[in-house]
Length: 173
Image (cartoon, rainbow, N blue to C red):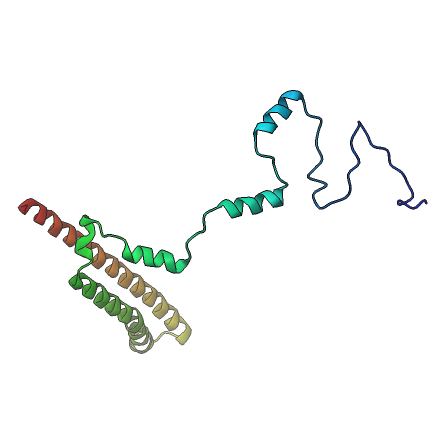
């Protein structure tokens, strides 16, 4: 076989010989008609993909970082229809509910699990430990769902009461 460096390749269809560069594959052009060349003269020249993306990144305005977004959100003006949610009373109530329901999500399932396992399923129904644990676990899952549902109801009721209060204030005015 002959070495490929010794072979001479002919150019096809009047193509020009170009030196090998990193953008030589992007620089391959089809023959252009006169109308295409006229419209391209008016437009900005198209850069190879990598160079174009670098140029696009340079033209893009800088994005805000996370700290700046949080600061903007905290300093944003409060809409008049949302003012009743940003009082000290509503903040204290929200924190109290958060702590209360968090404590309930931890303690109530543990108490239910222990009570049902030892006192109900083993002592009263005389089930084997594996079966008693299964039924206790199912009951605990139901208790957790009920606590989450209760939190959703309390939050919904609190918002509804705040909206009713706002409507009553608007009627007075």
